[in-house]
Image (cartoon, rainbow, N blue to C red; front, side, top):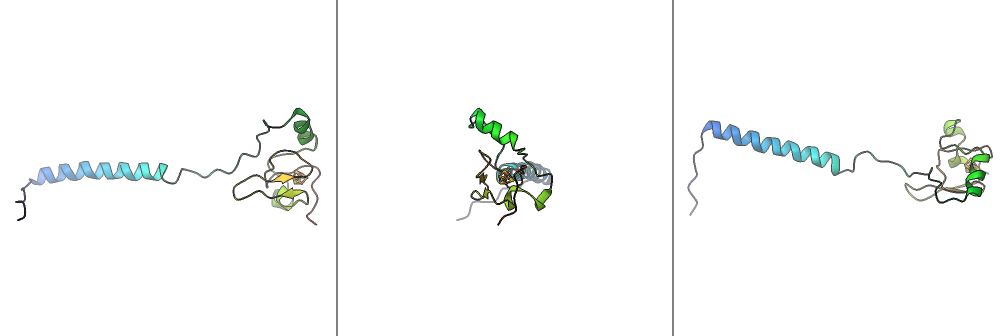
Length: 113
Ligand code: SF4
């Protein structure tokens, strides 16, 4: 046998709708900010803390910059000395020590053979 339905006033119905509606909006907002982790960030290839002073010196003496001034025409991704990393990872270079951003550049850039 079904339980008898309790009659609620129109005012009570509106109050409950407002309460649950606000809770629902809160869940959507929380879900939107935590569910997808916010804005995607790429890997930090500028962290040179693991490099020796000599390696850091080599990096700067070759003019390594995190963002190529030549854009996509000349960057590490299309340089002969670059080896790509995995998905969303930094690459490496045979000349410049440390993590290499595919969008970076240095004075030793050479077109991929
Ligand atoms: S040589 Fe320079 S431009 Fe080429 S991959 Fe290495 S750091 Fe990038």
